[in-house]
Image (cartoon, rainbow, N blue to C red; front, top):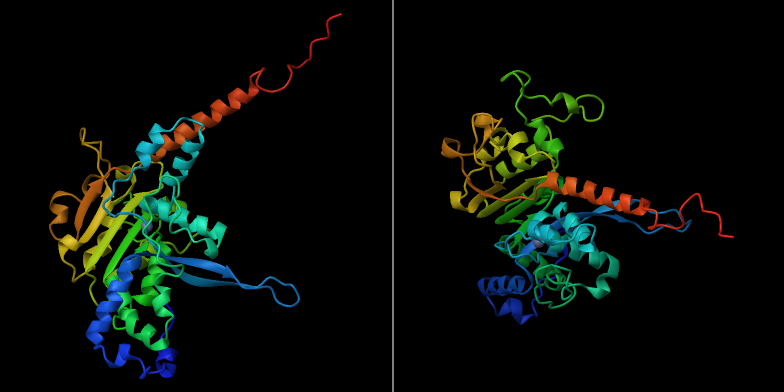
Length: 377
Ligand SMILES: [Zn+2]
């Protein structure tokens, strides 16, 4: 994912190579497309801070940011098993701890991919984890080498330049946090010739900071563009409906120079309170109505399911849900599904912690009873 302008100037035309002189460009592009399929047509994009090496005087180097791509291990049509696994685990067990972490993973459905990267970070690239099983994770795709798609990109500059558009148009890029997704589109979403993005998947566990910004004002129309009172002040004085990472991501999707073929957005919230009580969907997703050029069936918004209405007050946000006639004029399809119950996870953790603390205070659980009774004569 480097800038290609300098490579254009210095690339060797590779005239002695029959690959370029015998095969027409159409055939070469078919070969590239098949090559991408060998690894994974679905790639995570992550941004890492890399510390540069210490200088001669021993001072630690500064950090630089680096884009990484990692093959996705998850079948996009697979069911989210985290909640049922969590419920099946015993309180205070190691299994319970693992599944709590997975429920809270910012990678959401892609928790196995996150664990794969963490494992790779610990073991290093020499022990790539393509074939190793992460506990509870779906089976990994077959490994065909250590560097994956870089094998082809690093062959020579001419191949790099020629196959890059094929890579971007054949790959589904998956992003799991709002800020990185916005930055990715700002870097690679503005040049449709060099980086012809076709398929994008966002799988994001929204912090309540973001969703609260869009909570309806107490008096409709009043102070509609400003942040709620809890975010005003010194901490985040500039965060508002018009200026926040989610809005910038939506703006970038609207501004894409060429329409995507597929756009899937799966969302959950880290808020302990239920989605339907805090998220104004009509306000939060308003900007997405300006995304144009996609077939409505290929632009899918996957949201938490809404509970059944029980009386006029069961859904406090009333007209703010994307349902019924609110879906008539939007360019996307809304799918709904179950999400982990953050409040129950939180409560159970407190109970488990209290139980463990109580157990540790039982007289026979730790050491002698105080005051120590005098020895019998
Ligand atoms: Zn994944």
